[in-house]
Structure formats: C-alpha cells, structure tokens
Amino acid sequence: MKIWRRTPKWRQNQPTASDMSTTITCRLPHPGQLEILKSPARFKVLACGRRWGKSELGLIDILRAAHLEHKRCWWVAPTYQMAGQIWRDLVKSVKHLTNVVISQSQRRIELPKGGEIAIRSAHNPDKLRGAGLDFVILDEAARMPAQIWHDVIRPMLATSRGAARFLSTPKGRNWFWERHRDGHDPLQADWAAFDFSTAQSDLVDPAELESIRQNTAEHIWETEYEAKFSDDRGQVFRRVAEAAAPAPYDEPRPGHAYVAGVDWGRSKDYTAIAVIDAANGKMVALERFNQVGWELQRDRLAQIAAKWRPQVIWAEANSIGEPNIDALLREGLPVRRFYTSAKSKSPLIEALSLAIERNDITLLDDPVLLGELADYRFDRLPNGSYRYGAPPGSHDDTVIAAALAWYGAQHTSRNILDFA
Figure 1: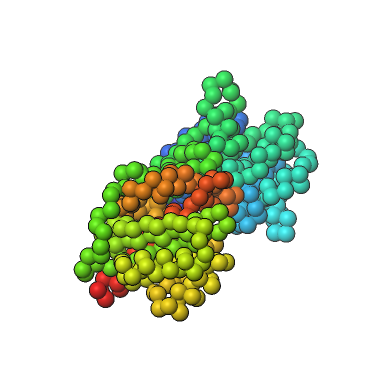
Figure 2 (figure 1 turned 90 degrees about the horizontal axis):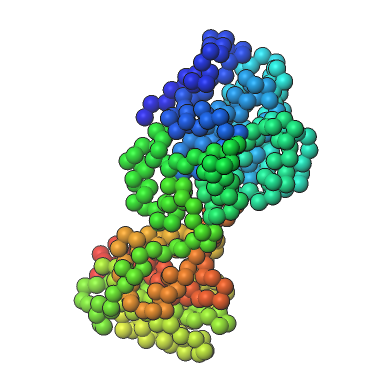
C-alpha cells in the first residue's frame, strides 16, 4: 500500500506546495473521503469502520475551513486524551506557516488570516457554551453525551450558519444514530449521511483485515469494522442453537483431557460447573445448583472432578471464591484462580462468543445454558470498550462457567494433551 504526501484535489487552483509559508499539504484522500469532501451538505454524518480514515478526513476538512476559509473551528472529542493524536497532527501540519500562533496549553491554533482551530472535550458539555462557531467536528460522536449537539453545539452555529461533521463508529441506536437517519432523509436538505466499512478504504491491507475478522466475535466485527448499528444492548452470542448437541458420552474417554469452569453462586444466584473435552471442544457435563451450603457445593464439585478427572479447574476467585478455592486446594483438586474484572471479563466472554460462531465448541443442549446465552447482552461504553452481563433479573452462572471452561481448554490444552 502506497502512501502519498500530495496536495489533494480540493487544493487545486490554490497556492502550490512550493510556497511552504502559505500552503498545507495533506495525504491524498481515497475515493470514499473524496466523495464526502465533495458533498455540499452542511451537516455530514459519517458512520465508518475502524481505520477507514475518518479522522484523517476530518483533519483535511478542518484545515480547509480554518486555513483557506478563515473560519473559527473546533475539534470536539469525548476526552482531551482521545484528541491527542489529532492535536499533534494539526500542529505538524501548520507549524511551518508564517505568523501562526500555537498554544500548547490551550490546544489552540491561530492562523495568519484569522482562522482558528481549538481542541475541546465533550466530557462536561456545559463548559463548551460560549461564542459562536463557523465549523465543528464531533469526533467519535456516538460516545458523547446526547445533549452535546442540540443543547450546546447547534446553537453556536446558528448566527454563522456554520457546518458540522459527525465522525464515529456506531454505538447502538443513540443520538448519533438519529442524526444518521437525518442524513438519509431526503426531506432534510442540510443533512447527508455516509456509511463505509473498514474494507472500503485503502488504509488496511485486505489480508490483515481478514485475519482480524477470523479472530473477532461477530457482534464486535459488525459494529467496529462494518459500522452497523445495533440495539443499545446487543446480543453477544450468535448461532447458539446450531452449537448445541446432546451429551456426546457419559464417561471420560481414554487419552482425552478435560477442563472445568466454576462460577460460584451469590445470594439468589446458582453455582455452575461446566466440563469440556479439551481434545475436541465438546461440553460433556454441566451442573447447576443453589440452596446448599458451601461444604456441600465443594463436595459436589469434588464428585464431578472424581468422575471426569479434569487436568485443571478454573474457578472465579472474587469474593466468596477465595475461601472455596483454598478449601479445594487443600483437598488436592487442581483449581486455578480467575479474577473477574472489567478488563479480564471482556476477552473471556468474547473468546466464548467467537468459539460458538466458528463451531469450535459444542454446547450441551441444556435449556438453561442456551437461554442464558441467548439473553446475554453487551453495552458499548464511552471509552469504546464493552460491558457484558445478563439483563436485570436474569442469571449468567452457566455462561461464566462455560466461558471459564473454554478459557481452560484454550490456555492449557496443549500441555494437557502432551501430558496425556
């Protein structure tokens, strides 16, 4: 893939790059970016996949507005940190200009003929209220508070009839989705919406993109790379029914290695134990119970371990897990601790989701397990990460037990099989 540092088409008929005191050169836009740059719409909504080049497009657009059209411009991001690279790119693009004033502390650039670019954070929308604007870019708009547009930014564009760009990957059907619908409404003359997947650019090698797709859960791929809008709380596990089958056998098979996952019940929850054959990815056992004391629960787990002889048992160690794990270790069971946190839970759940979609795992045809998997949801957080969990009033005990067992199969199966 070749990258060209060349004056883009919108710079034609303007001063050439030979006069470096007045000219800014940018990367040549790819066809999708050119389509958006040529659009006469006042408000443009871009729903684009990761690495499509929306930030680069915004850079071209805001430099054009500030440097060539001498407008007062803002680049608004969810946080100052998220705009760090854009700020560095802006400074690099203009620092050679004559009489340019760059304020690092205020993140503001004053251009020679009156144009201005400032970086702003949407973290506290009320702090953005103030004088009018000519042009604004809302970067990762879907991750901003809903009032940022109607209550704060839109009034600031009224006097100048200023323009706005909304750049983002989708985040459910929120206010960004509503503006996206405006852009596709032929009766909204000021608006235009554009939809581009990551593949619709020349910035990511197709082989690299295919590698990412093969190792990414479908719900993440559709949102992050295909830029599709989903419900605010999307379904995590797809193709669950196709992955279910009756128990393959009732007894352990010679030469096969088994792993188990345990989710301890809390209050009204259940303790769940899942066992997977690491040799073929088949779930062979699933136990679920509550209303019994911890000693009886550990005894039940010991009985399952005596039958299937798992090489490793991954158990959630948070809170009540610690004393139970300590007791099981004293009894000689091969238990390992898994500490569940926002950081560790996402890859745990996403690995199970991907395994189900790729038919790498065969689930037991258990109605509780299949129901919990079907109900499991994700929320997209403002920082771009995901939060996973069961809907209020529902359980996820068998989901976590299955995910821990699959984690064990993936992280220990090679050593286990060699040992076996």
